[in-house]
Amino acid sequence: MLIIWILLFSISPAIADTVMLQLGDGRIDGRKLRPYALSWQQCGIVEGQWQAAGPLAEELTIVDEHTFRLRQTSRQPGGTVVTSDTFMDRTTLAPLRMEMVATVDGNRVASAERQLTRDGYTGVQIRGDETKELAGKISSTMLHGGAMGLPLATMDWQSDIVEFQASMMSFDATYKVKARWVGKETLTIDDQKILAWLIDVEWLHEETGDVYPPGPDASGGRYWVVPNPPDGIPNVPIYKTDSYVVEFGHDVCPVATE
Image (cartoon, rainbow, N blue to C red; front, side, top):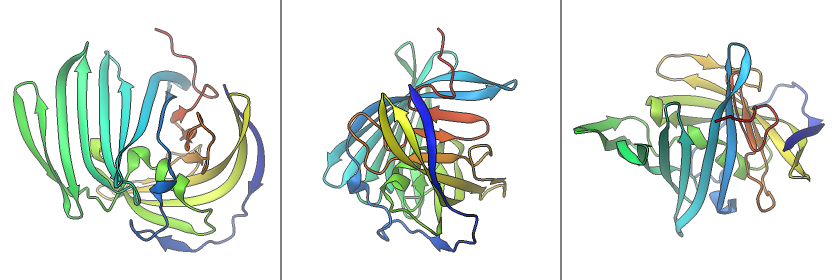
């Protein structure tokens, strides 16, 4: 069980400078991350109530001295299990290759593989007997938006607003993201008191111009990050928006029923 204990520190709404982050500039250091295999709960707002959306299992492994593999596995409505592997540079956490496999009752129904470079991506998608060539502008210079808390957790506390590019491959979408460190909170996880940094994020969808404002009660959301967690505790125990939560434990999300 995860319990939010007490707000320890928050910054004033004073004007902060905005600095641009580029992968490889030293602000992110993925070498601080340790391998793990953990599971989070997910939930979303349905008719004004939080409804369980199933667990998210995540495993970070070291492939070699230069590469991480982040595996995320989730069960979707209808029994489809989606496993997504993202291979990332161990230092910058730049995404280099993404693979996805969807199965129903253990049978593969779809798969995709994409190679990312600084200029974009190419790949192939298979659904049944159909094969489709893929290409797009999402590149290895953009953080993986589906795991953006990890690079944030490797960064030092920032008084500035940090702006960078990120992507959501499942939507073939790119974003300009602004992250701001807004406070610190102590969480109780498995009877341990864990200090987490609060980072609010604003997303600008570059293709549509839509803006998702920062904060846990807005559509942009907030990350709770733990820079140096003890064993068994994730670097990112919570991400919350006004309509979606993924959390390590049950604080907001109800317990799923079969």
